[in-house]
Length: 331
Image (cartoon, rainbow, N blue to C red; front, top):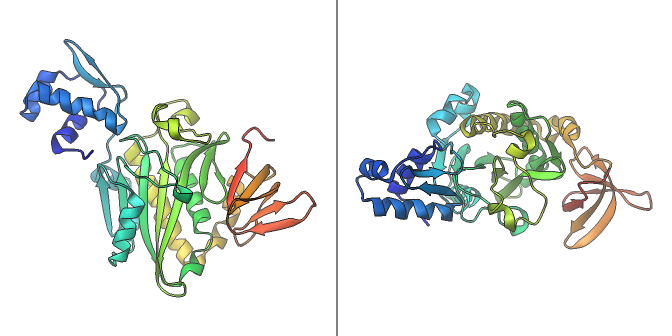
């Protein structure tokens, strides 16, 4: 379902979480009350819930802070602004990553930034769906061009993880860590994920699209399809999540700063900090590569960003890729 201009205006009016009468909404938009009812009723398709009370009107179950470029820009540092080629906010899109991958193939400049209020086909790792209800979380992608080929981007997901933790600490949110190679975790549950997609030459110019999904408030009904333990910032902090526009700005400050430094120095600049956020080290875990399991105890990462797994025979083996499964309750 595409969001119409009238529906966006209704959402903007209802975003304060207060009651607004059908008559008020109809007069503001210049439509009939039945038309207002039709538009409000369709909000459930976006994952938004509302209540309607006779004599009072309509109210969203939870207030919304819609993303606005001017508000995000207010939190951006001058250096960040200089690195952004364009900043787009889409009410609805299939996938922010897919959109920027398409722009990359059309030779778009480095520094393209894309936010979305709602994704209809948000992507996680290995083709999984990223649950993306409207106006609740952060769905962000950045296009960044590297001149030295794919090899120069080794460890990029680890560096991006460091950037996300730095941004969260600014709010301040301390109970967060990183799960190799690209997940944001808190209290043994997934808080966010990083998806990096590449296009270009192996030994020449290439483009990376860095996608980030971060849960601020994830309605239980929307999360029913998620097959792993998850959390959001409202659960982590026990209070309302941080302002979305401020968090969006802080994320961009940290992400673009890290990307610029990574481009010149590589993963070495971020290894020690990543290790300080490692939430897997010392845990029993199983690494899956093409369906084949490797069980052992995680011993951190090496200087290339590879996962170190101590196998039952005591052998320490390094892995460049794979998917790690572990018990959140393990010591």
